[in-house]
Image (cartoon, rainbow, N blue to C red; front, side, top):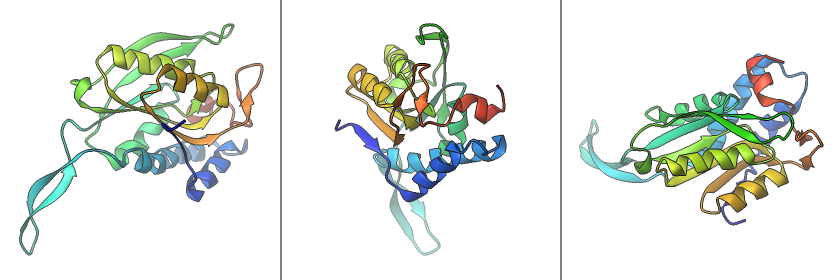
Length: 209
């Protein structure tokens, strides 16, 4: 899969291992998710377009590269994706934030939309969709479809942990997007949880059960 990047950086691997630990508490978990998102974002945003802008240093006037155009839109898939937004905003404070709300049917595991709000003009932005977990791939694929229906073109998807099944589904549904994965895990279990995974990311970020 040419459009899939699996992160190999030791810092990302180390922090994901800490995330997996069932003894990692809510506050530390939340901080780690943000830090991992920032480290992954550094890689995912390496091709942001730049333009030369005139600035004045203490020595002279010069033209130097700055991020061009309408810049970045970060779109978390609610609710767990919210945990990754701060890490991206640390890198690009001017980024706009959209939201996509999907919930998974407990019986069929199929995603259902309940909210979609995207920054305009969405067609002129680089769009980074974030969700800690790519399990079945249903929510991720549906979120990208919704963004395309609203006019989004330059779309990237970033998750911390993916199951092979979910990665394959997202790739097949949207072969035109770049996908960034912190760790590709072994498989989904019968309850559609990633193994070895880290449990329910939303519950662990927000301290709910």
